[in-house]
Image (cartoon, rainbow, N blue to C red):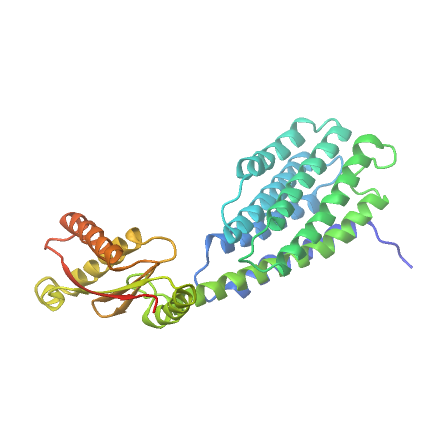
Length: 353
């Protein structure tokens, strides 16, 4: 039976990467892509280019050095793009400057140490492992609003790849006689090839699950949001208000409701056009969003009407809120609209019985 060799594993890995670089964008097609999804696709493309250059390089060949350096650039920048995609899905995280510094330092140091095999092998594998571990740290950081399954899958697959990269780098740097070439059939290289062929598709699955989670969250937000004002729509407001009213009754807290109706809205549409009416609605919505406290609710009730629920607030707090909102609308409308904008407010208070 023919034994595995390093070149075969590299070619199989390259085929895996190429297939995923085509399949993942095809699966993600059909809807607008976020920056995180585009970074995920870019990561697969860059890593495919990196492995292509590595497969084409040959020890001692005229193009061995430039192809190998390009391979390191593709792998390091692809890993940095993977970090960017995860950061886009999970939210702002520290470490961006470090990740991209490693992405630049890896191929640069590899090129400068080309004549010293132990240095460049230890350098490239060590920095690549550090990049992979940074991605692992990113996905394992507690994020309760995101699924744990895809994050653990990515962390395990990339963590295993980082471990065998460190092993391969240590062999090349400190035990060069046993591992004198990238294609030497050493257990470190063969294990790396096997782990990489498993980790790459598993990581792609994790990316697709993360993208699906993002799409489901976007659909959920779309179903609850008024498209013009970006406030809660009436259905979502009714659902959230029910929970807020139940909480107020349970704890005996007051709850203030304000119903806001733009004055002369039909006249605005007739005189200035429906586009001006839409601008007026967005202006009031922005002023509402900037005036609310955490825990308060606001939504578009219908047409030119808005509804606001102020938690733990009585009539006095409601009157003060109305005054602040009027001031904000007056200040904004002076610059954003060519006509004055005002509204009427109805106020009601739910108090402890």
